[in-house]
Amino acid sequence: MTTGTTEIASHNRIGTKKWLTEYNIWFYALFGTAVGAGTLFLPVQLGLSGPLAMLVMLFVAFPFTYYPHLCLARYIISSDSLSPTLLSATQQYYGITVARIINALYTLTFLLIIFVYAISVTNSADSLLRQFWQVQLPRPLLAIIVVSALHGLFLFGKHTTLKIMGMLVIPLIIYLTVLAITLISHWNVQNILRMADDIHIDTSSLKALWLLMPVMVFSFSHTPIISTFANHCKRTYGDDAEFHIKQIVKPSYMIICIIILFFVFSCVFSLSQSDIQQTKEKNLTILTAVAGKNALYWIALTATPVAIVAMTKSFLGTYFGVLEGVRGLFGRVDHGNLYNKTSRKRDKLISIGLIFILTLLMVLWNPNTLNVIAGISGPMIALILFILPALSFWLVRPLHRYRSVTSLIVLCIGLSSFGIAVFNLFN
Image (tube, rainbow, N blue to C red; front, side, top):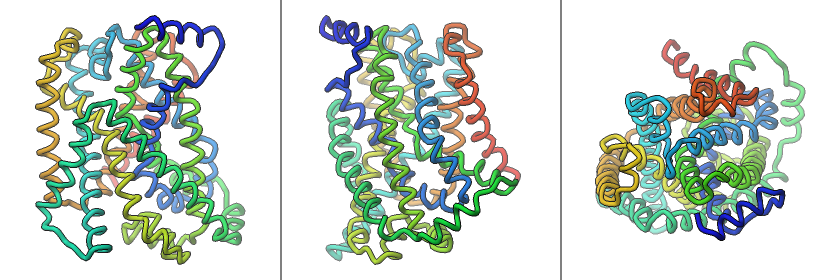
């Protein structure tokens, strides 16, 4: 850690809480990974879950986002490694066998997600070409162009990739905010009042709330970027890593939650239950539904480009975690290997090549797997983001200092969300 960084950390630690310029790039990365495809489908799922679910989500969105991600970051930076990852931390706490299992689950979960993003970007690009230029490229050619472009952005390096994500985040924030404000004049007041009168607690509403959990986990999660983020803070700030993590994530998550909730509620309030149900049955995004219902043609014109931006941004943010996971599948995870430049470069190139080939094959296949992926991804993210770190606070001695009521709540929510996977097996 440099002298300048040490002085900054020491200065902040004694009470001067200040947003540093270097925090901006991580705000963009966190926002960019959290706000993407899930945000465009969340209003549909939430609107069908009933008014009780909407009310609960209004109050739990921030803690639902902040505490699990903070737990995961603590889990990683508490490792003895000076450059820790989720894999190396898990190996230290539980041994190589458990680390390999967790890494395999982690990699599979987010590899499937980037497949969906790549497929969606390709399909959206095809739609865009036909909509504005009446051009339809052969699927193999378009797939190669899109997948190569997505991977090409990442090959510029982590710092450049994060900057690119930052450039994409600002327009998306503006778009979602302007859209939400525009829709205020289209809110169905009678429908809102009817929803308010219909808030009640019964078996059906509680079940709907339970089934919504994995969707919330998926929509607010930016798990893949957390390992990279925690690694950066540990290497840069050393023992002060947790302080700086909190400095960055608290305001970031507040802004993320406010914008997402405003967008989600504004969309739901402008549509009826039947409109939302039809949107789900037709497998459309909320942007298409809102544009058609309220005759907002500027949304119809911009929906596809915005979807491409959102998917690209989420792809880049998720790719960090996937690359780390794939490298761990065939590479060594001991601390010495982390500092071996030759091994790092070799493993990275092999991993990128493997991910590229698998992604290209999936885009060419073009399966309709969104519902399946959403059903798997939510519970699996809950396992990694909620259950693993929170449970470890009670099982692993170096992590005992993080035991709290909050960590117990995080664990319980994670178990509830993961339980959906078991529930779905028998229904």
